[in-house]
Image (cartoon, rainbow, N blue to C red; front, top):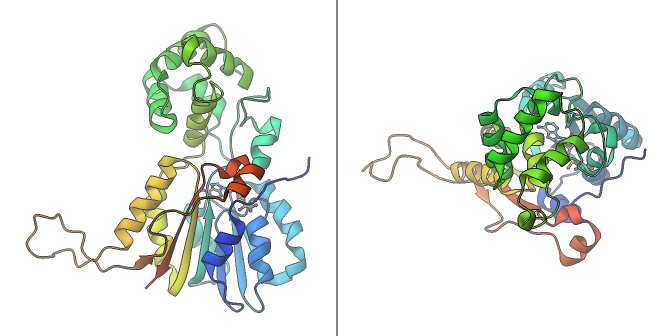
Length: 310
Ligand SMILES: C[S@@+](CC[C@H](N)C(=O)[O-])C[C@H]1O[C@@H](n2cnc3c(N)ncnc32)[C@H](O)[C@@H]1O
């Protein structure tokens, strides 16, 4: 199957990075190398370091970017471990960093990866196929309370308790093995008049399980702080998020980084000594154009935030 993924707000991201031909850039989520190809094209003697926790995505992008030769480097890791990649290639700072959060269309559209409620497949949903935790384990081993909690927190699912209760009941008879078995349980847990109110009835629960399996929000805010701190003066941090929980982590990190003092407001004088580290270039997040939204449904929920290192 061909690796197809339309890069969201590609021009806006590249403009946001303000690429210097001799600069050093980090693409935290190379995916199908859409954004990275545009970055690499703008480099002369510069370097682009590409990360992904999906080995298949790295393999595909290595092939797609091979014309750029040694200028482009690849490293398999969670971007939260980006310092390991910096060490491996002896890089001490960046002129620009891009994060395009979430899953790629390729991952969603490859049935055997088990991300999609539209295809029948084994429950999996791992971006990094070398990791142990998968959707099968979550669905068949988490307690009713923990399932309800992740459905509420990560999926904002109104019927979280009922769905969790029915999952636990169903797995008493036999393990829940496939996406379609899970669809069935979700569908019967949601009252008829709400079933299609917010799109497909499984949408929120699948999103929640995916976030849990891939630990997508764990440490995201802290990681953004660390990424900003590895930028050179004038370097750019460009982040695309796709749901409110991701965007909240980005906003929280930007709020910390752009503020001079983090003491509670009742403190008469500053004791934290925190100095602002960035200016936020996007007062409000940039959204995809109507044209892009027509072409690529994935861009509908996208929010782009850009900051510059002081
Ligand atoms: C939306 S796609 C990126 C698409 C890419 N920008 C392009 O234009 O082709 C997201 C990619 O990031 C990877 N990914 C998501 N979270 C990650 C993380 N925490 N660490 C490393 N890679 C991650 C996924 O495996 C996926 O390949």
